[in-house]
Length: 284
Image 1 (cartoon, rainbow, N blue to C red):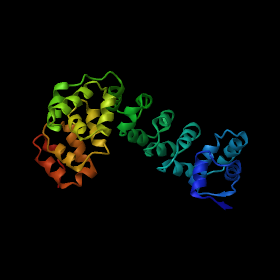
Image 2: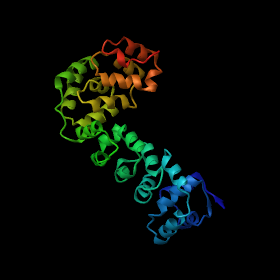
Image 3: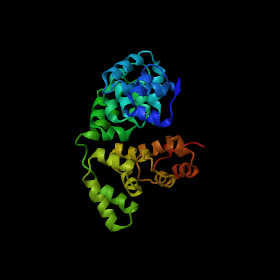
């Protein structure tokens, strides 16, 4: 049985391999890990060559479901695999939750599988503000889930509905503290004033520190939560947030409840000393 090089594997994963290579995968003539085989067969099931596609579809029937779940969880999983799983495997145990767990799974492939998600999967997806703010279709699909609370449904409607008007005065005050340069502060406020709730969520997650330090005081709770989900958020920013008496109780509670934030002694100390509300401060 032939062992394939990484280059050949990449060619197969992207449909560029020779017909002979593709056929070898379909007939079991190539040595592959279970996850690689599952992923490549999913790609080949949509091959332009009808015989390859047919052989791949037949071969998929004998593959363990666990191989697809494993492939779906991998960071390098590719769109054709997500697409195949959404169309053909959504009702199988563990498949949809694996898609949700993979941060690289595009929202478009999650939309059709929402109805198959477990309650845990739904709740996990609701925490992914980046995904649901970027995709109105995904938010709409989630809104019909019986696993959501009334508050969560309200958050979804806020994201992609007309939402509440932005509190320009509150943001101006926050921006003054976040950005000392008057010109840049004005530019920031002008940008924010034109944004929808979903756009402010995206900006909170992907923008700079001035955006986060301003949007943490946005009047919309979803936007505030998005700031804490930003992968660019620094320890110093969280430390500053923990000491701000102007933040809402909910944000202070989220900071206090975050295991990673609690590892930072300064965050814990600032929460304890925050005059806003000692009820949310973590106990020593």
